[in-house]
Length: 130
Image (cartoon, rainbow, N blue to C red; front, side, top):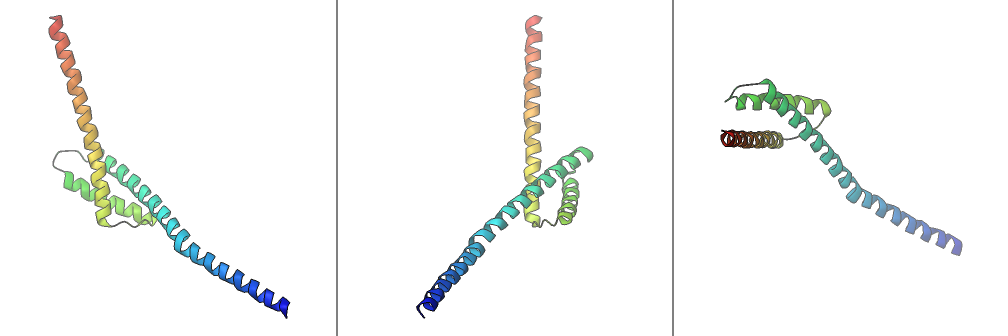
């Protein structure tokens, strides 16, 4: 009888621990994994969008065609993300597109500023040599 009581008690403790462990996994580990997967998918999406923006920036030339480029990038990105099963809202995609465009423009401004500095230095050198 005493032996059966000990066995029942150990079973209850083990059962309680198992329930607690399952609860901990469901409430802590699963959301953590989902966040990691979401972060990874978001990184992939950002990379795809960055490449698409660069590609359409190079292939669609001419000023004043930003809206056309945006539409082309949005279509290409939605198609590629759909193939990969990555789901982002249109707002998230728009934000990532705008970030990629800002990065390109920042690079261009830096490039132009460097060119202006170089040209100014050349003019000063030619003036001092004259």
